Length: 139
Image (cartoon, rainbow, N blue to C red; front, side):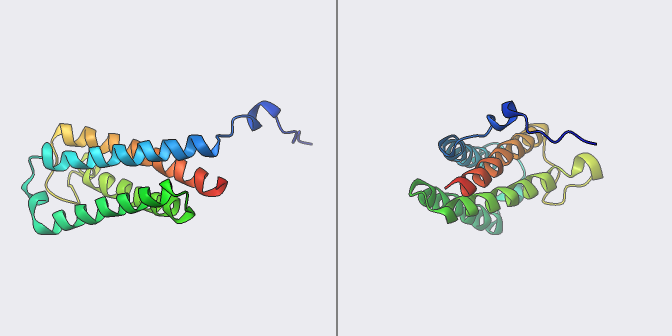
């Protein structure tokens, strides 16, 4: 039938807790920098309305709270970081929806720089999800 032997070289590819912990810290800090570009480089006026400023403030506070818990190696910090990263990916994918659907679901259509920034942010948030998941299960 089938050969179900475990290849010993594959089992050595596991990442350590410390690697995932550090990758998550770097990813969350990178997300804050990328998120700040909304107010530095985005020319869309919608994000200067009070609703979006409140949303961004809550986003920053959640990142800060999860960093606080992660530095203390509390498991819920990794969980919060993972959930926040999934929400961030969803937001940035919806902001780039104009590429597929010819309409942006979040605000008016972003320029090319913001579209690239959104895709970069999705990649960084993906790393945050990967590392928070692994660190959560290794702590």
